Image (tube, rainbow, N blue to C red; front, side, top):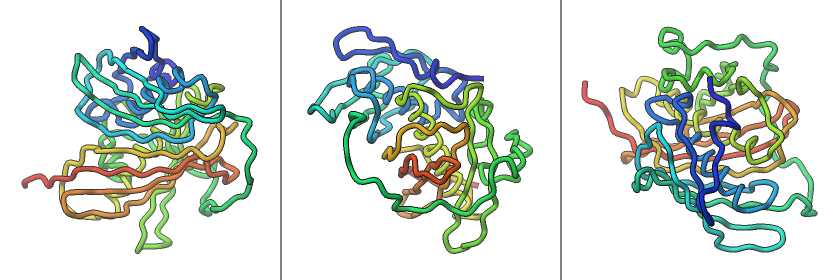
Length: 277
């Protein structure tokens, strides 16, 4: 079992340069994309000197291995309230991921109003935990990505929502193990990044129904952070597929706290290729 804070930690090796180790505890077919993005986010946070992230946009350039990665962080613009940073992650000289991160101060005065409303779903305590093994996976909406060590890091409780067949959505209560939340906002934001990243493809697969077997490596991921870290163990992840065609798949997802506060929202696109029978 992994530990999110430990496994996304970065070590400063020079001016704007950091190093991390990609842990085998965060594997599906390879290192989970949202986990790699979390490492890049931590590097941006370490370099920015600001208390919390506002957004993350990353592009996956090549498949990473479970080994050390080097990160180069540059500040493109800085003010008292915000900083824009770029992160390049490489492994043995090969680019793995590039990311753009906005970091912000925590004393910015602005309007406070809830502009979106949470779905009406049961509380996590009312749902049974799903144990994702290859047999159980065949009966869950997460079947497309249900193997690997990654799922040992999560407690997962899914909601079967068929209220809108024309817009299939996947609702999942997620709690990280062995620690559920983190005092450092940059670490806690990694919960949102990983939950959004891993929630989208199962939602797309559910929307496709019996659309055949395919492979869909991640091309990019975008996450906007809307509220500071929630003082709750569970995140409600709502994901849905938005488009499939021309060799591409896409979807969106949101994370909320149990009181309905929107914590983060995001989108991802995948390069899709059908497998021959």
